[in-house]
Amino acid sequence: MGDLANKIMTVLDRKVNIVSDAQRIRPENSEVYRLWGDNGLIKSITGFEPEFDIMKGLELTCEWYLKKENLNRFKHGIYNV
Image (cartoon, rainbow, N blue to C red; front, side, top):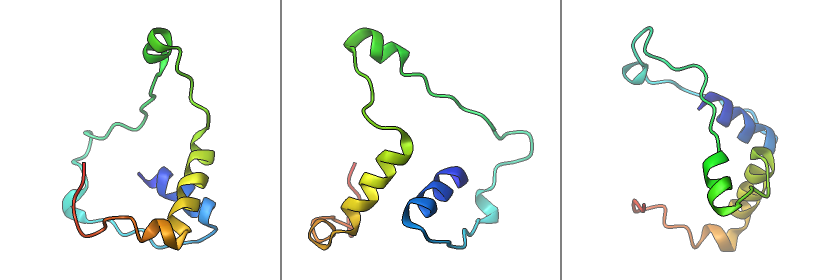
């Protein structure tokens, strides 16, 4: 999550203080430090290939949220899945 937050700060050209909640920190030796997603299966079944890398996707997402007309459509007061 920290890496993603840092990427978002880079896209927005902003530095924010990230606060950790001590109650949510995982116990020692329980953390997975390296996860690698593999889209090979979906690619082989459907031919799908992503159009953007993570940075381009974050840029487009942040751009969308920065437009007032889009932000007005965002339902921030309710939980949607």
